[in-house]
Image 1 (cartoon, rainbow, N blue to C red):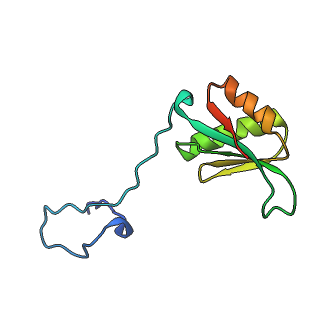
Image 2 (cartoon, rainbow, N blue to C red):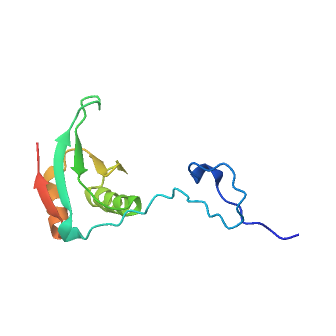
Length: 117
């Protein structure tokens, strides 16, 4: 018995069955995001306390790139500030008021940074 290559039926769009043996399915595979160089990133650093029980957090917004690079940047900022936080949807959330410190760290890493709010 020969093994057939399994394909993911969920990624096929608009085709249920084909009798053509040479038919190739078009799969909807999301493209991997490429990360812009540090000099081309436009990041915004601001303080926020909405929906957080009155506690202040520092938000870094505007990151363009892959989720892995976002997590790496967030991990570096959290360790440099010595606090916790999270990264998702192009935003990095750092617990506490570290607006000035994060601004200086990002400038050292050659990011284009603006303070907002």
